[in-house]
Length: 468
Ligand code: HEM
Image (tube, rainbow, N blue to C red; front, side, top):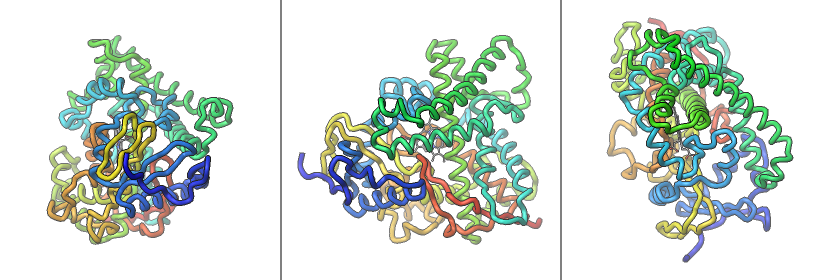
C-alpha cells in the first residue's frame, strides 16, 4: 500500500485521539480546526483515530474529489442520526440514495424554485419587521430571528404550511438543535459508539423523546395534507401563490400516488431531512454574512448600492431576475460561506482501498473531507484568511481548481438544496440591507460546533435604520 499519512499528534493506545475530543462545543471546534490545519500543513492527508477506527482527514482538493466520488456511503457514525432521518438523502445508504436522489432532483430545479420567490420575499419582509424592534439597541442574537423566519420559509415551500400554521415551530427547531447536540455528545464518547451501551444510556432516552416530538409533528402535517388533497379541501389556499407553486410534500405525494415510489415513512424521512438540512444551515450562513457586512462598512456600502441599483427606490419585491443581478451580494455570501462554512466537514466510508496522489487509504477506515480545510487551502493565495468578496468577481483571482470552494460539499453527493439556499439567503440579505445599517465586529465572535458551526455569542450585530 505504500506510505501511510502522518498521524495527528497525541494518539494514545486503545483510545487513539478520543480523549482529545472531550470538551464543550467551543473547544470541540478549536480542536477540529487544529486537526484540519495539521492535514493542510502535511500535504493534504492525515489520520486520526477513534479508538481502533482510522479516520483520514483530507484537505487536498484533488484527493477530496476522488474520495467524494468513489466513496458514496457514509461511515458508521452517520448511523447515529439514522433513527431520525433514515432513508432521507443525507443518511441513506447508497442503494436507497441513488434512486431517491433521482426522484427528488426535479423538485430543486430553477423552474420550481422560481415559484417560491414570492414566499422568500414575504418571509424576508416579516424578518425585517421583526428586526425593527432591535433598532438602536444593544447587540443581539440575530440568528434566533433567522432560524424562526427560515424555518417558516422552508415549511411553506417544503410542506405547504400557511404562515400562521404552527405545526412545525420553535419546539421542532429546538428538538432538532438538541438532537444535533446529542449526536455530537455520542460522537465524542467512544463507549457510546457501541449500540448496546448507547441503548441503555440516558442519551438514548432523551433521543427517543426528541424523535417523538419531531415525528409526531411531521406525520400530522403529512396526514392532513393527504386528506386535503384527497378531499380537494382548501384548494384555494395556494391561489394566492404562484399558480405553479407546488411544495415538496405535494410533489412527493404525487410520486407515491402515480408511481408508488415512496411510502409515508420515506416521505416523512425526506421531509425531516430537507427541513433539518435547510433552515439551520441557511440561518447560520446569513448570520455570518451579516456579521461580516457589519464589520466591513465598505463592503456593506457596495452591497447596499447594488441592491438600490437593482430595485431603485421602489418598495417592491425581488424577482428571480433581480436576485440574479445581485452579483456582488452573491460574492459576499460565497466569501462568508468560504470563511465560515455552516457544515465544516463531511465523512465517507472507505469500502474498498482508495488510491490518492500519495497514499492508498485502506478499506474499513473512514474519511473526513474537510470543507473548512479546503476553503482555507493555500491555493486561495496569501490573502486566504481575509474577507474579500471581490475575489469572486474576477475568475482570474480564483483558484483554478473549483473543488476548493465546497461549502455545499463536492461530487455526486453534494447539497441538493444549494440553488434554493442561494436564492433564499440573497432575498433575506437584500431586504435587511435595504432597511438597516448593520454594525458588528467579527473579531468578538467565538465559534462553536454541533455538526454545524455557529456563533457562540448572543451579541452578534447592532442595527440602525437607514435614512432615505
Ligand atoms: C447555506 C446553506 C446550506 C449548506 C452550507 C449546505 C451544505 C450541505 C452539505 C455540506 C451537504 C453534504 C452533507 C453530507 O454529505 O454529509 C448537504 C447535503 C444536502 N443538503 Fe444542503 N446545505 C445548505 C442548504 C440546503 C437547503 C436549503 C436544502 C433544501 C432545501 C438542502 C438540502 C440538502 C440535501 C437534501 C442534502 C443531501 C444530498 C444527498 O446526499 O444527495 N441544503 N448540504
